[in-house]
Amino acid sequence: MTKPLRLGIAGLGTVGVGVLRIVRKQSALLTARTGRAIVISAVSARNRDKDRGVPITGYDWEDNPVELATRDDVDVFVELMGGADGPAKAATEAALKAGKDVVTANKAMLAVHGQALAELAEGAGRVIRYEAAVAGGIPVIKSLMEGLAGNEITRVMGVMNGTCNYILTRMQSSGLSYDEVFEEANKLGYLEADPNLDVGGIDAGHKLSILASIAFGTRVAFDAMELEGIGRITIEDIRQAADMGYRIKLLGVSRMTGRGLEQRMSPCLVPCASPLGQLEGGTNMVVIEGDSVGQIVLRGAGAGEGPTASAVMADVCDIARGLRLPVFGQPAAGLKQATPAVSATPAAFYLRMALQDKPGALAKVAAVLGQNGISINRMRQYDHDETTAPVLIVTHRCVRADLDRAIGAMAETGVVEGEPVALRIEEV
Ligand code: NAP
Ligand code: HSE
Image (tube, rainbow, N blue to C red; front, side, top):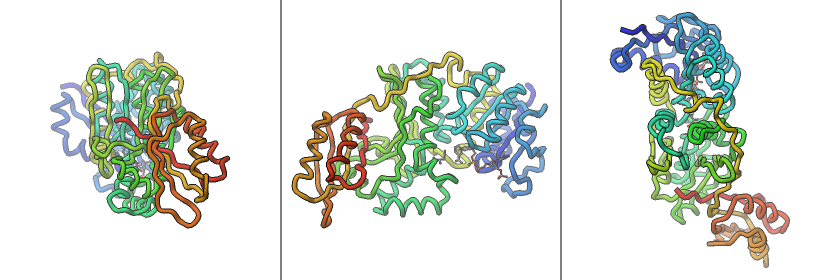
């Protein structure tokens, strides 16, 4: 029998404890499937005395994750602490330099430092695996990198933040406001320590930037992503969208266009009857389109102890079996620096604004849209109060840059109260 594969696990929170449980409970299964025992040599976290609901006395303890990462009895460093920088990055770099393979669930670190870490790993002949970093338990990295390796990928999109999908679908089903449901999600413990990572679209943007790199052979470019969170979505938006046969989703879309790489994470309208429109609660969905395969849809739990640890263990098993792939599917040195293409693909837009309720106000807004080449498809005024009239406009297909110019010009008409909300209607 081949020698055991020895893990060093840094981070014993939700995901780390899940990994300990699988290694303990499924030891025979893991050995049968990989041909070797998978064992834990040592663990690290901040607080040694914390009760983690699973025994850790059988493993050596390291206070410092860098020390853990470089131990002689560790073959694979499993990084489950989180954070783009700090101990996660320091220990990952130390592990690679010490000749260890790395498994991580850390999308923030890969989105920000993915290229440098990939070059370091490949220069040292090591692998970094990160199935758990995108869409939790859904094997999306494996699907893109291996199952669809023979395809030119044309589009990757999906709902990749369960918390936002919970908030939006709960608003829909309960009729509660954004603030009320946000508070509910907070009480349920769904929000990250910094909630803006969720509702600001950053967490989902990290995930999409990683998928885009694999799909299009480009360097991870999170800083080039168009990012917009869900904080301005009102219950009225949810209702108006539903009236027109749509649901609002925090949707990530990436595609290679003639003008460069389009990457955006923003609230969009999708048809109610589409698989994305039907996605409820904290579930994730990733849709991948390839020239030969057509469209495939992957759906499942995007977070939580079991699903995320399942993905970590899939990576550990691949390393145990001897599977060694470049970090982003092709050698890091050859990944292209993509030109960012800001919303190059035209779409219809949902536009909500509050107009002063006085003669000529609507005409001024319509004129500004027309002057910027934007044609109105549908329009509705609803629920007037004494001084303002909420107006909803659905445009014909246009490019976002033209719409943004029109929105900028609307401020100068003196008839629009506050900032209009513009949501793309995505063709899915
Ligand atoms: P968590 O519950 O907050 O656990 C973090 C762990 O890291 C804790 O055990 C903590 O120690 C330890 N830690 C933090 N700083 C440390 C340091 N300086 N030295 C040693 N240990 C340190 O986090 P999590 O939810 O398990 O997430 C872990 C990673 O998985 C993150 O990258 C996250 O983005 C990713 N992820 C999580 C999920 C999910 O559903 N939770 C899903 C997908 C991906 P103490 O316990 O002693 O405080
Ligand atoms: N905050 C994330 C979510 C956790 O809600 O999907 C998994 O990355």
